[in-house]
Image (tube, rainbow, N blue to C red; front, side, top):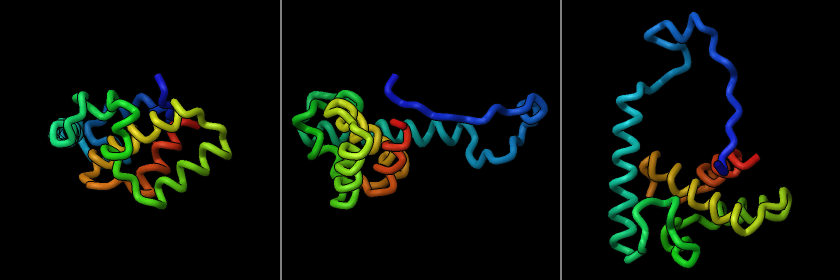
Length: 123
């Protein structure tokens, strides 16, 4: 697994409650959002003629066309490569994750916010 996410433990009492504090979106809503993102990914990849079904499997040579990163997002990724020593493989994986984050948010392009979030999953 390439992603790392630190989370705080949830006390048992909160797990027993149907309304967990801090949870803004239920699992049904998340599932719908993921399903929509998958449809968007499939349609985009078909339109571009990319031999992949989801962002995670996009070949490196098609990444720029699929990701559509803003100049600020690309600069941010470049700084991460230089400062934290991301390998080429890690940078490409980060681009794929940023594209998926943008898809889940309904964004056409990958912006600095999505790239920052994807980079955050690497550290």
